[in-house]
Image (cartoon, rainbow, N blue to C red; front, side, top):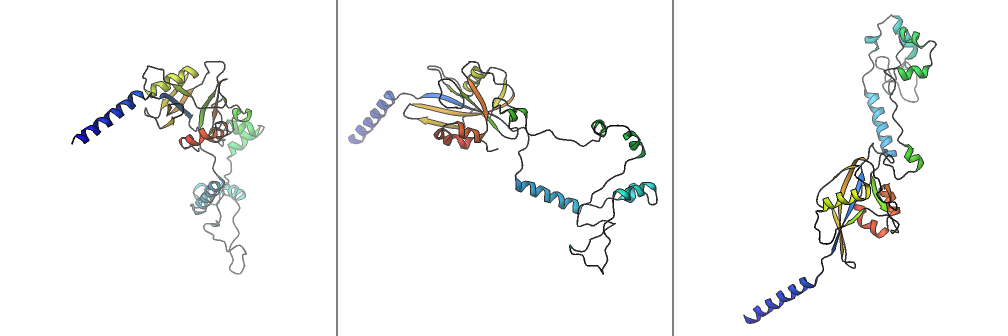
Length: 284
């Protein structure tokens, strides 16, 4: 019984001595500030082929255009419609068709998609006389919608400090000072003797290096990852944030910054450092 009590005292004394001699690690926060994609990603070759196949299949199985509803039989409008839309080849049992016999339904070969060209009215033809066709299409309400280019001016100039680049990818903020050898994610150390919540430390640190013209939000107040550096007695926590609007304005002259994709981060960050955080980054 006495030996058991002595053993407990020794263990308690040993653990207390270690706790007194141990030095609490230096806490720092690494901010993963990202700009989410603005447009959809570029479809792969397989996706393009799949969408094209689905579109062709849908148009083949769609209902035949009811021309008799819009162009009455025996009228001039029907004649103009026939001029623009030629009837398919008629089917004859005595003829051999190398590409397969036509599947005619209401004067349409249902093996292929149906293309419809609608004749213009007399009023529309009168408006086209003496006018530039390109200008008329621009002023027409029912003109074809042309999407903007996916490649921006920042992409053409290679400006990695602009948020208007790589619109279909996720961009991450990286910084570098004259004292740093490599690019890194923004890291802020906790001041000695001051206890600050991690999400507030991220906000104060971001405003201190990039100004207050940044509208952002943290994904969560709790960290998503942490790294321990035993040799330096340091511990770094990671918090994810998304920028919504605004600009990053360096508050010091020697501070450089870039907005990089995950692939560009792999080339800019040290390999050992990137291998520990690559699972936190988005592939898109």
